[in-house]
Length: 254
Image (cartoon, rainbow, N blue to C red; front, side, top):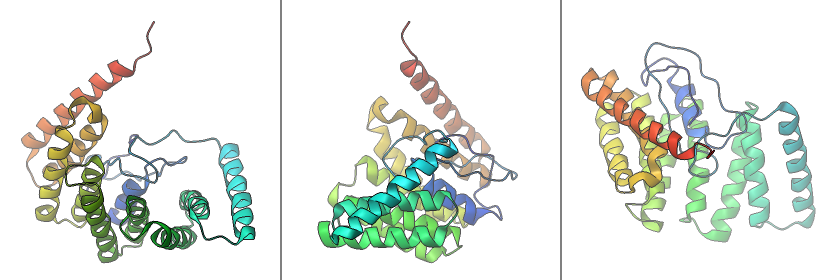
């Protein structure tokens, strides 16, 4: 994920922080966090696919996207079909509304998309898990941690059943649930989840280096918060090595 201003897992801004990191994935306009004492908390699970946060889009591009989505929504609703095309439009518009800070409207749109996908694809489809993650982030933004935890645990269970215990998306859910626990100061619950996520990603070799580096940073932040600075710094060093290697691999050929 793109850089965030330093925050701690246990700061008074925990609700906005955990919501931001859970929602940040694939956003055209990434969230801005205020500064606080501590270190960066990052995540890669987001509103789209497993990747880093996209660069901020110009305002005109965001408006064009919004207008296009609203036009799509009107057309889909005119047809009267509660199908996956409508669910996709609702989902993308929810992302825009979330970026605009309209959390209540974003939640309504996500919920509609979720209900359609549950009917069309079944309640245990991986696409359902993705929407559950985003709804959890909205609940976290409101400080409703119990509701957020329920949604994240359901998303994790879906991915474990549908994709397997060692799937990368299962690791993403483990990481997100760990972040939620860490935001509440529950290191005992967060730490084994980070360890499980790392175990999955370490099996992928270099193919998931960016994701592995992000979980290392998340786990390191927790270790710093619990006074294990030496262990945290070792994880941060590993993350830096992974990022440096990834940067060299992505460098343009001359």
